[in-house]
Image (cartoon, chains in turn orange, purple):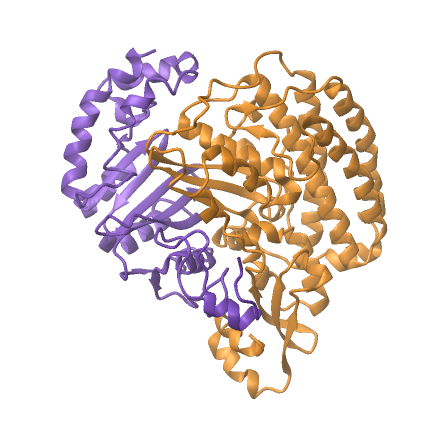
Length: 384
Length: 238
């Protein structure tokens, strides 16, 4: 592992043959402990001057064997583990997992539970995007947004804390619905938050959208076409910024997203700036969804009838949701016992990270930082 | 409530037994061969859905059921896509649907052609996931699963095949670039070789690691002691 050149083989083989003859090319190691990699990501860069000729990601530093653990836990016991994959969007992970098991059990969460789920999931999407914006801007050199976004994200975490006692790895949902009824004044808190945060999003935009340095650093950086996105399986805001109007909340609705009116923002150029605009627009759409959900939240039970021991029939299921980062899927094989026979997590960050090589080729080395930021990866989810 | 799931099931059991035996290896396979089992738990489990899904649950009683089943048992699945593939490739090919999700059970030898046809002619342009499941008691130990999605059709499809331990399978990274890392992960976790892969090496575990953790015979606290001692300088990673 000490010789970084030994790991460059996946790049174009003919090109790398010249690496040692061509004095212009330099192999540089970045990470795994680098502040801009948002975790422990190691990137081996091949540079010609300041130009990136290719790169390779070395991942797995945070590998905990989540899928193996799942096979040794019951369905209920595995539920908290999923929160620890994409820990900045733990609620989304929980929603995907609970819904997948519910599908396998052939049950549905009651309407009130679905409303609570949607409110919390969208709040979490907002929190995830805020954290992305703060760190992404910080990487590029704009320090202020970080303080703004963390200040406002705090309000979301407070709601989570009041709801279920946890701020980050919430474990908010249970298989069959929600464990907790909303607390006294939940709706009021959410509505108060909505009026509080809407002007704050404008504030972030004021700082960045027309900021000349920001535009220079993000326009035409890390461009990826829609065709490449689809070939590489890239989903989420990255795919939408390349002009594909595809969001699982609309394409294959889950929970009760069918009931809400919202738009799918898309970009045109597929560059870092468009991805920024798409995510900003998505924050506003999330606010719209939360507003509708909190206005229309019905009374009723919050748990479906689920037996204490969860024992799905023999079979398999794939269920995926639109997590803040892209398509988050769970493929669960049941052998009829209380423990899953196999759980496969299809992590959006892992698949999206594969596009890093393509997006950075031909860019400047400083742009690698911007591209890692714009992909919005969470290494906990990449490595699982 | 008890009538709905029960009435379509007896014929299904027979169908399944007929369909599964000639193709399957005969050994227990939790995902297909054992499917009739859920009949018993199903009576109590779907307490909620029959009320809401009453029209859908009633449909499978009719002979036209395979198109849109709502029962908890995998049923044969028919569609123009399946007809076309069956006409071309005949045996070694089954199509099922379970909980409104369709999947194909394909013979290993047909995998490259079927995947190619699905991408080129049937517009399955997005490979969502490639993964594997280990059944150590079966003669052909591994299920390899491709989860596909088609943007134009807004449709999902799973393709599944069985291979034995040590058998190779052709790579799909030429069809979908995303399969590159996904296949590396399958190799890392299960030790399945993908022929023609541009760079098949471990992705999550370190290069020198011995063993493939997601195999069922790999213990939950098992580790590569030698690697841990040499590289981390500690007695054990536990």
